Image 1 (cartoon, helix red, strand yellow):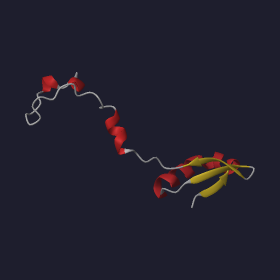
Image 2 (cartoon, helix red, strand yellow):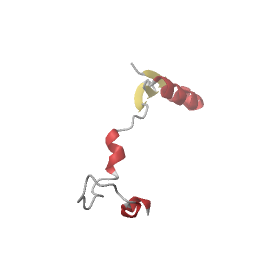
Image 3 (cartoon, helix red, strand yellow):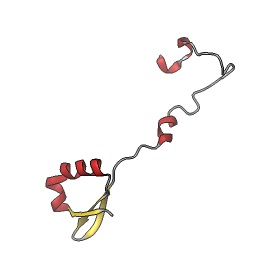
Length: 77
């Protein structure tokens, strides 16, 4: 269950709230005049995100069981 805090309480203690969110993983809802306006949640990396940059970079793969030489790595250039 998320913790609720007003904008006026959040502003001077924002770093403390950020640290608490990092440590506990709990969500924080920031309110304005009692109305929820923002939700702060811990960042969770999507495993697919790591591979998005590599998509469509393999142009040809003739010998999948052979080791790849340093000259063949475009990413190293």
